[in-house]
Image (cartoon, rainbow, N blue to C red; front, side):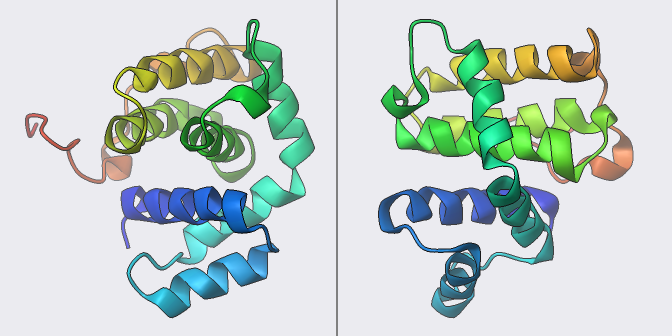
Length: 156
């Protein structure tokens, strides 16, 4: 499974968990049982790391929310932000920030409100710069990490 698909499936599982609760094992097992959007090993690692570091991830997001709280964000946006911050900090290398941000933006375009992708992009960029340096969010995507072109975008 490509990482793009793994991220999307993990996002959908985390989003669903926001309604149903449950522990990580139940969430992953349910996603595999339903079969349509199974969480693979990479997605499972993302979810495990989020649950292990959820307080730290939420604190980083909250610090960047101006006049907002995490509870007031749409659940789609909160799930996207949580998973992307988790991946930037605990699943990848700091040279992957641009990939993670791009994938979160593409998921926001698909699942979130019409202009939410801009909010997601800005907040994740700010976190990347704070945690990995000024140019963290602007690094080029390494060729081996390019899964597939964004939906509707030109193929390079």
